[in-house]
Length: 216
Image (cartoon, rainbow, N blue to C red; front, side):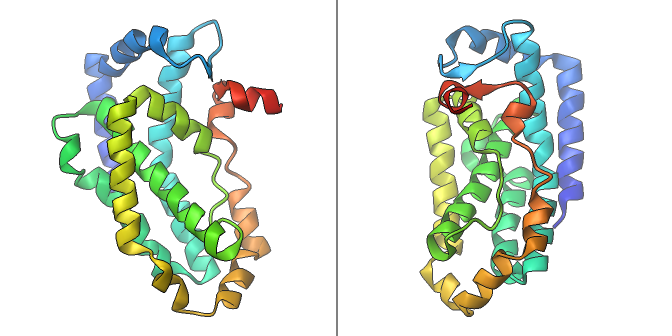
C-alpha cells in the first residue's frame, strides 16, 4: 500500500484549506440545511463539523494500512489488497466525476469513496462468512458524509463503489480457497484485537444520528 502518497495529498489539502478556508465556508452554508436526524452540539456546530470532516479524511490512510495489516495476518491479502488498492486509486487518480474538485472539499468525496469501499467489502464478507473482515465503525460517519456531499452526487459515488467492487469481488473470488479456512482466520483473536482500537468516529467527535441516539 502506498499510503505515503495519500498522506502527502491530504497534507497539501490542509495547506489549501489554511490558505482559502473553502471547507469552513462551505460547511457554514450547509449547516442550516442538514437533515434534522444529524445531531450536532448546539455550541460550535460549524467547528465540530469541520473537525469531523477533517478526521474522516485523515483516517483513510490509517484505515487502509490497518485493513491491509489485518488481511495479511488473516492470510487473505491476495483477495483484499486489490480492493484496498482501488480505494487508494480513488485518491491518487479519482474518477472523472470528481474533476474540478480541490482541497479538503475534494478529499471528502474521495474519503467517502474509500470508506464506502471498505463497508462494501465488509458486507460481502458478512454475506459469505457471517462476520465482517473489518469491524469498522465508520458507517454512521459515512451517512453524515453522504449528507454533506449531497444526495445526488453521493449516489453517483456509491455507484462508482458498487461498480469497483462488482468488478473485483464476485462469488468466484470466495471459491478460491476453503471457506472453513477463511472462517477460522476471520475468527482469530488477533484479527479482533487489531480492530478494537477503532472507536466510532462520529461518536468520538460528538456527532451522531437521531436513530443512533435512540439506541443509547
